[in-house]
Each structure stands twice: as C-alpha cells, then as structure tokens.
Length: 180
Figure 1 (spheres, helix red, strand yellow):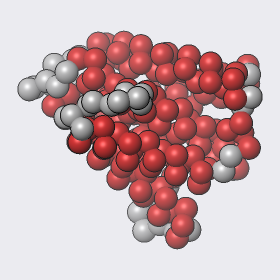
Figure 2 (cartoon, rainbow, N blue to C red; figure 1 turned 180 degrees about the horizontal axis):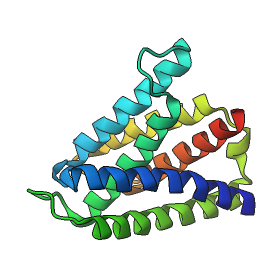
Figure 3 (cartoon, rainbow, N blue to C red; figure 1 turned 90 degrees about the vertical axis):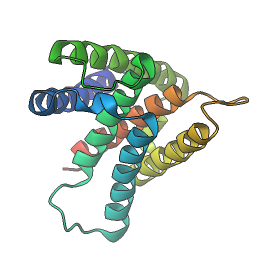
Figure 4 (cartoon, rainbow, N blue to C red; figure 1 turned 60 degrees about the horizontal axis):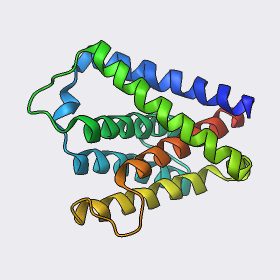
C-alpha cells in the first residue's frame, strides 16, 4: 500500500504542476464553467482515450497520458466548482487555486486509500482500457444526475463520481508509466 501511495503522489505532482502552469498562463478563467461544461470536457478526453485504445493510432501528438492528466485536473476543477459555486468572472489567484486543488486532492486520495484497502489493490490487475470504460460509465452517471437537477434516490452524488474518475485516471497513469 505504501508503494501505491508514493506512485499516486508521483502522478499527482505531475498533474498539479501542469495545473499550476496553466493557472499562470490563463488565470482562473475555468471558474466560469458550469458543471455540465466540465463534465463534457472530461467526456471528450475519455472518448479520445477510448478511440486511441481501439484504433491504436493518433493524428494529434498528445497521447493517452495527457488526456488522463486532463481528466484529473478537470475533475478537480469540478469539485472546486461544487464547493464554491460558479463565478461570473475569474476570482481565484494562484495560491487560492492551489490550496483548493490540494484540499480536494487530499480528500480524493484518502478515499482511494480506504477503498484500496478494502478492495485489496484490485486495480493493479485491471487493464487501462477497463479503467477508461469505468471513467466513461461514471461520466454517463454524472450526466444523468445533472439531467435530474442533481437529485438521486439512492446513489452517490456527483462529487463522489468525480473523485472516482480522478482515482481511475491515476491508476491508469500508474499502469502506463510501468508499460514504458
């Protein structure tokens, strides 16, 4: 389990670094995005990954890794939007954004550690393509919950689904780093 925690941190450090650089380039322009827009961004990335996995070729230089990183960062943005609400204008500076990023990432990592304990690291025996499919399934669930105006009868909320997508994407990136 210690190895998983370190590998998780290594992946997240790379994702956080990219988030920080994009914050320096663009500021918090993403704060105006509504949840369905973030969900659709994540959906596009997951669909591209699935297409790459099925077709085995790409006409754009970016591969699966960059798309999984995008899924992680957009999901964290979505968790921040759930907490703070949608802004009319960019309203977070770099330090505030990174604190919120770290807060939601820590909550998500703790969820992973608890589930990983209970499931016995079953993800290690999964294929990256299965993790992609699970992310797509979570996205379809989120879209349905969004269509239901956020109401569920017996299911987890949108935030739990975003957290699961983050964790599945991290697992996929760990697998991909070992394939190299």
